[in-house]
Length: 381
Image 1: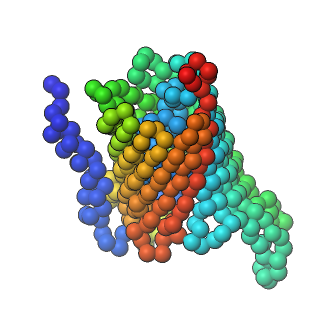
Image 2: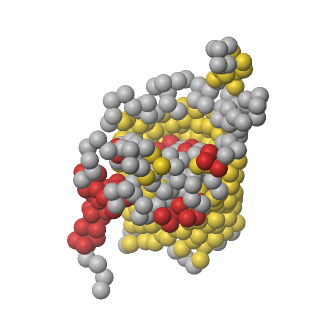
Image 3: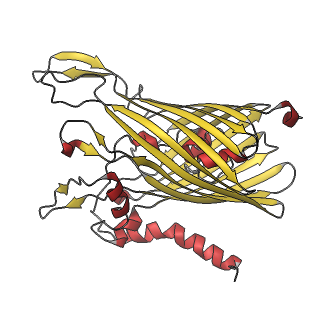
């Protein structure tokens, strides 16, 4: 029996409101955020998706699909693409912290694709001081990650991708304590697994996607086991529907849900956070049922994003989105806006973020992305 339109709408509404319902039942003063290492692996790097509430798992393919769902690449209209994005981060607090993201893909025929991306997070310049307050060194802490992807279609509508990734976190900027027991740079290996499905419904298009991102090793900044931290392994699922109004106008709307696959910190008898030293794979499975407040708290860990994009002749674009994150998990809630223009093979996109929390350093975040799409001569005609 096929679901009716009413049942589909009820399911969509229910999945959107579940995090809100769970958060409403939590104690008002409760706070239990989930700490992770190298959080830049989960930050939306490009302006297009950032303008739609960080939604990107099931949106139409573009050059930056490597971050969200590399399985979209075999369905790209262009054969090859190159992208560059720059984000001044925490601009309300500092002026020298930024995220740079570069991406590339090449579609091999109509069934396969390869992709690559590199991101660099500069934390600005910092002064290293002795215990007596004497300047010792000036360092530039940073984090970066580089990944490759291979994607393949299975038939007309389905594709899958695997994306191995190497990341490197250097929070000391190369500086070490003389006794050798201080913090040090931390390498890590992880990978993404993703699937994508797209089809048509009359004159319109729809798609859904799912990805488990950043599955890999734990990160250790010191020699002791207690200094190891989880990477931001994340489950994301989403869908979108595109209304092709006529030959010139289109409207895409979508929903995306995400959850960290990282153990929830527990509390001991005096309320102190208990360090969790389980293995990364074990932590992935326990992340679904280990919250102190049970399913209510587990649901509050789900983030929900909704977004929309209006396109005119595939030349001009306007975007808006909303991302919900529970305050009990330290996750922000904000609205986003974006715009884009594409002429010939060059595209330019910008986005703006406005937080609902007064004084939130994320508020006012501006992203700028530049892209280049290339087609073979036979397709360009």
